[in-house]
Image (cartoon, rainbow, N blue to C red; front, side, top):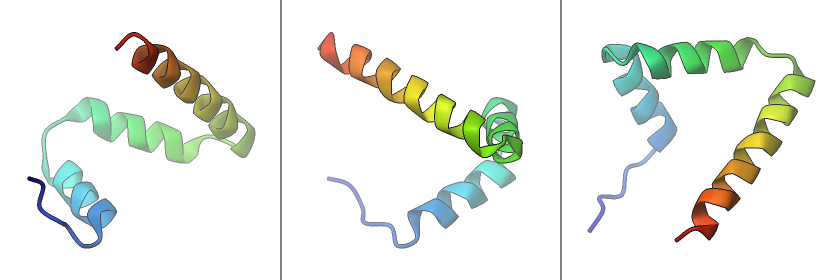
Length: 57
């Protein structure tokens, strides 16, 4: 069903950089500029949000 893509992250980042989706580009830039504690807090928040979302299914 899905094609195996070697080096998926590199492939996706190339698509993002070449694309016109400013939201995802800005999101990645902001994330990469966060300090480690802020990245950790965002990870915890995102995991909890995903758990809540997946629990509704």
